[in-house]
Image (tube, rainbow, N blue to C red; front, side, top):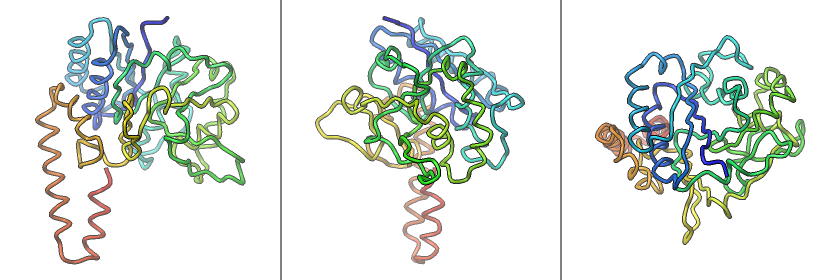
Length: 294
């Protein structure tokens, strides 16, 4: 069985510290496995050599067999056209569309969002049969519905892009990525999740996360079961109180950024409480939307 597993994150400078917490959780629960971590980074993070050095020290301290490599996202040769007004910090969430190109010598990679906590080895995802599928996603019971036009695209697989397994070899060989530039222009698709569901239609394998990893979003927990993966969709535990937040903080405490996270959390929480105490309902409602979205 393969003992070294390839992992990919796509981030900018704003979220590298939360990514470190996700990585710490993964390494602390590796149980004999090691990881090659590929961080597809915006230029602002690539310019921060101290951040890169800190991340490498974090990984080496926990497991010397694991490694982390930073790869600059090349906008010029990207499969879609990027703009400053794209969501999530200039379209970082779309970087995963180019993993087939950015990791040319890797045939399979597990993609993780920075707001995930990994509490068991990812060996099953690393070894499961891909067949002719381009993507493995967790069962829709633990995922959000994509906002796509059903009449236009027919029945689509629901998917959440927090944890994905890409069959990079099949994507390269089929050249399915050539459909990305046209699909990105369709406003009815929900970010990269909708684009992937349409582009990979018929080649997406469903993985029963409830049986294997008990994969959960922050709002969907089954009592009495040991959780393997948490994806903190919506409110982030380093900003606001949320379900299972203490699990995230357990691993944040093992990072060099614990005090910084705590300071920011208290600031945001007190600000939120202050806003809720403002007597004007109309003004409070407007500010609630502003401060509850992270």
